[in-house]
Image (cartoon, rainbow, N blue to C red):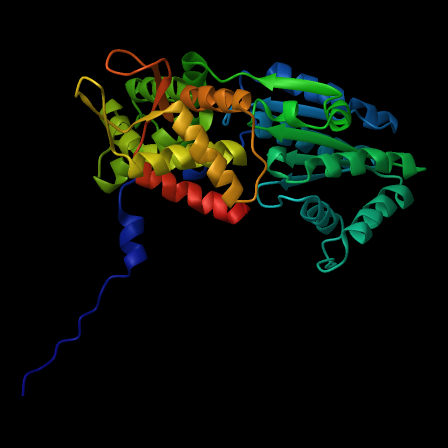
Length: 410
């Protein structure tokens, strides 16, 4: 009878721990990490601090609105200042509290108010209570505690009834004898405020700040600081940092893109058991993170712009080639007018209001600016004058990513 040997396997995680790694602290090179130091945002930090300054004298600060492209440091700046404010409050016993709400996850007035109340009363569950009850409870907290409550509404453009939300919060101050409610609105959508009701706009945009994208030199300095803490000494070449910064600057000046490139380059180095991250690994990282970056960018677009992009992706799949009058065949080229017609049909399907042709042209310009589409004027072989539009990425992947966003929203 054969003897069956007992095979003793080494623990999988022991083997993993024994592998060499270029990382010292991988969390620091994560796009979700908020550093203590925010280079090139000192002026914005000082400005936000000044806007919130009145609470130190028991006065309501102005509402204010921050906007700019993804990865420009808006959220990091606000969180940094609020962290400093919270430290100050603890030492000096000031009646101030703040609540951060990601409106992508809480896209309605009710959900925003419910999230705020849960942060104030973490031991209680208010799910199921009416919107008016939750609103009154928030006012009661500020009034009875004499509390100045600051609501940070990140991606505020995702709130469907944003006009009603801001109007209620601003009017709520009229009902308070003590304390106050203030709003800090943050948006990646540069044209969002133009669509607000005039009363909402005047209330929310008492103060405004625009965050410009980082340039290549700024991104390089940001990456140098992050890599010195995230990676082991001597593992990241200057050429790799320069290339990651340059690629991110070309895309949109997004610091998160730059960070993601180096993070993925480090992961490739570990998987291939390399000790140095050079520009060739950043090139490899670019291929693997490009799709992730695009999907991330798509998720930040306003719903109407997502519908326009969806129309382009859908038509690109339905009409893969276009034949000119002279017989020349173009792949994936669409007419601006047919895209607009397709968009109108989609808006009707999703029971959404439609934008005007002027706003449609604005959205097309922005999608081109983000690098998601290519736009050219019609030339030889095409009757009349129109704009020709071509998707910059795989239409199937863009369509799939948009369906996840649109079906979730609607």
